[in-house]
Amino acid sequence: MKLNIEHVTVNIGKDCILPDISLQAAQGEFLSLQGPSGCGKSTLLKAIAGILPVEQGQIFLDGQDITQMPIHKRGTVIVFQDMRLFPNMNVEDNIAFPLKMQRLPKAQRLQTARELLEKVQLAGYGKRRIHQLSGGQQQRVALARALAAKPKLLLLDEPFSALDEELRQGMRELVLKLHRDFNMTTIMVTHDRPEALSMSDRIIAMSNGQIVDILKKST
Ligand SMILES: Nc1ncnc2c1ncn2[C@@H]1O[C@H](COP(=O)(O)OP(=O)(O)OP(=O)(O)O)[C@@H](O)[C@H]1O
Ligand SMILES: [Mg+2]
Image 1: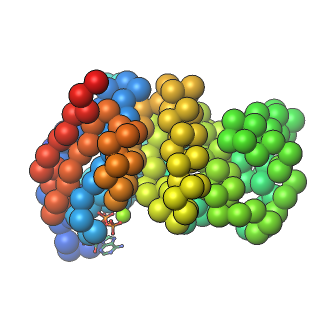
Image 2: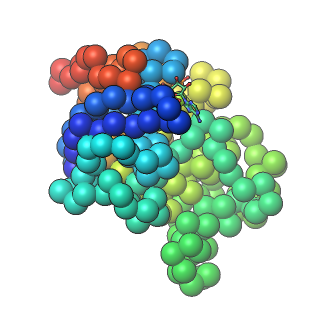
Image 3: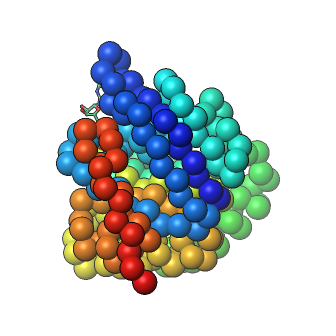
């Protein structure tokens, strides 16, 4: 899925957070977003996902204008650092939740949930409660839930920052594998420079709501 952001302005309250931002991502490209705290990285992801409204400018996915489209129709999904899993549901119901919203039959939902659990190396964990999982396992459930909706564009907002280094390395490899298997265009916010360098095709540096540098990884 090709992403095209054209001269987008995003305000929060009276503050202009993104004055005029433009960015393109090619089908299947992996972009990292970097920049100081408060520079607008999460705001940009939220605007792409439709969680925050766009004041001016347009966002296109494969040429279709999604600027005013409701969140669930966009084909985009965000994974946040704090995951936002549903504590009252077990693991497979969490993963199957987006499919419930799409009104798929239960058997099909659970089938997909089990396949995704295998993909994130948690086969057999479907009936566990969320609080019975480690932080890294919860992060993998959040990833599986994001993939259940078959996103065309995956947005990751510091998805590993709560994990220790060993787990982070495993998660990086898993995300790259899923990115390739599902051939998803992916944008990931990370504060970790080596992580950005090792995972992405391009690194987008932001400052004060603007893109100030784009580093293309030489291959
Ligand atoms: N709900 C809100 N109300 C008011 N201001 C907000 C709100 N959310 C974000 N902001 C402001 O918007 C600016 C950009 O925030 P954003 O969360 O996009 O930063 P960020 O680059 O993701 O930072 P971090 O690396 O700390 O996550 C900040 O100045 C922040 O204070
Ligand atoms: Mg942020």
